[in-house]
Image 1: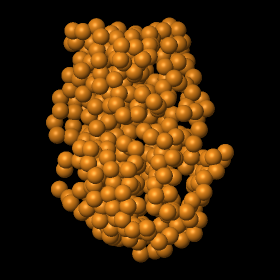
Image 2 (image 1 turned 120 degrees about the horizontal axis):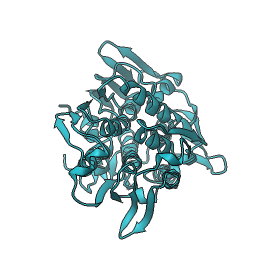
Image 3 (image 1 turned 180 degrees about the horizontal axis):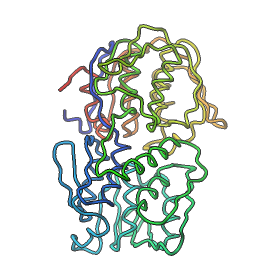
Length: 412
């Protein structure tokens, strides 16, 4: 489906489907950095078609890595930084897209090389926090320059391991900084110590788990993506029924898997079956009070769900949402104002209260930031309400390329 710069028309109605989820881009991009360091035929299976992952793959090939692709599996035939000999230029320009893990993980990895690498991201990535990654790279004598010759950031290594055996990484704005360093330097005697962890701690645990899993294996399988699961699951809990045919167990290392337990605690009809995870709207849901810092990518879906539940739900510690692909707090509040959904937001406490089950305003035209999670959340509001149009439909390719087909019951 060609969604480039398009409006997508959303018809209101219930949701009934049996679907297969995409796999996790968070897991995949971590596995790609491990594969880049390992080489030697290291294999990754079930890679998603997410643009973040495909951009990472393209950049890894551009820096000299030889990668054999076969359907949804790849194998690394050489490793970084030895593969630098395969490239002829001393300065390599990389179009790195708008993915946080893509840009941050690549930057840490390429700091181990001898060549200069210039990053040219897209969308709002150049406005997102980076200094807490650049600082430790500078501590390792990596040359870092910003906003020169049209490049967002340029780096030139190699990192000097004699400078330090331990580095503290400030995770106040993102745990991706620590994950990037843990992955990129995983086969060197450098201890990474995450400090000031305020949100997304589960993603650090995912990084550690993948590193441990890969120690005695030459392959990794990418699991289903629980962030993607939340959208069709939320819609089914409001009005409909869904079976996730390739989801058979909870994932302790994906923060957004918590959506299942949050919904169950609210009274949802959800069960694990021999055919997969099944859920429906048969049971009435209760309001919830949730700390959003544990799973910031899940907050937009939770805001939607709260709007569909009788009573007042509360989401706390939401400040981290301001540092995503867009200012998601502002985007969500704009969306709810447009749809006349009552809410209150306390900036000093980063706390949102949402009063649910207000009558729909009818068809609406939602124009969000170019942010995949905002586009998918807008779709949920329109589908459960009076329908309408959502802009920037192509943005779903970042994490869930088949989102609209799946939500409309079109399966392979």
